[in-house]
Amino acid sequence: MKPVVDVQRKTAKRSPGNVSPVGIPVARPVLTAAIIIALATLVTPVFADPNAASTFNQRCAGCHTYGKGIRVGPDLKGVTDRRPRSWLLRFIRSSESVIRSGDPVAQALYQTFHRQKMPDHDLSPQQIEDLLDYFEQGGPGRQAADERDASTATLADVEVGRRLFAGAVRLTSGSQACSSCHRAGDTTWIQGGSLGPNLSRTYWEYKDKTITSLLRHPCFPREPEIAHSDYLTPQESFELKAYLRQVSLSQPNVRRPVNREETDKNASLKSNKQVIP
Ligand code: HEC
Ligand code: HEC
Image (tube, rainbow, N blue to C red; front, side, top):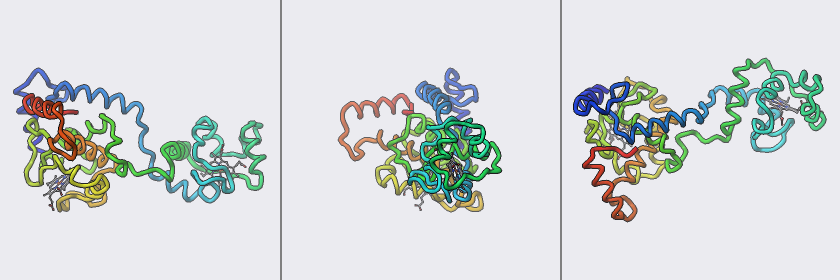
């Protein structure tokens, strides 16, 4: 962590014109990306509470599937699209009182599934909201964030990955930034460490899945700093993967023919000491 901060200060002195409100020197593309991130956070849903999965398994899955058809009650896949949230909140809490209130949708459901009534649930409004978020994000069929292929990443994901790598954003586990031991891409603007290998081409040397499993464990024994289980969150791992992919794409002679434009871009990047977001 420390070396990164020091370098940021040094760089800040060199180019006082480009200092962000937090004192970190930023190039214009980085600012643009920061704006993209700010926008993206407005539309990206917060990841559902992991307890929602166990609530579903323990209290709903006996009568409902998610995407596997009718069991005792209707399939809950898509339920957050077909019903308003306020209705779902009332219905899950006490389906019986919604049916008795004469609500036409609830009565129709009851007619169709009348062999068994859905019991009332003493779940808190927050627990129900969490369940609904969980349904919205794909329920039990949801892919863990880090299992997504890095090619599906947005520019904003790549930028978060870059910041995590460089230590500009702290890892949730509090563990050291990757850049204290690794370099990747054009690191002239950050001090990449050299204890670990240069990761500029790593993404192409392995498959996406291999990188995913590599990132599930600390790459270097660093006990007792962190427990193995909470090294990176799945989301952080996805973002780092996205960044490593982006970096490797900008390396010359990686897997695909290098066209002239590509080479020129790399050359100008080096001379400007800028980073592609
Ligand atoms: C004992 C069986 C049973 C359990 C357990 C159960 N449900 Fe139901 N659920 C039903 C039935 C039957 C219906 C159809 C309406 C009716 O007859 O009450 C239903 C309907 C629903 C609906 C409306 C679906 C639609 O298409 O509009 C939602 C939402 C729902 N349940 C959510 C849940 C949630 C969330 C849980 C767990 C906290 C749960 N249910 C637990 C039996 C159950
Ligand atoms: C304390 C230093 C240190 C930190 C911090 C660190 N690494 Fe490493 N990393 C290493 C070392 C050393 C190796 C080589 C281990 C080996 O060969 O067994 C390595 C290996 C790797 C590899 C495998 C590279 C290859 O070619 O096989 C990847 C991928 C990797 N690290 C990613 C990361 C990421 C991403 C982060 C940040 C979340 C990170 N590392 C943080 C030291 C570190």
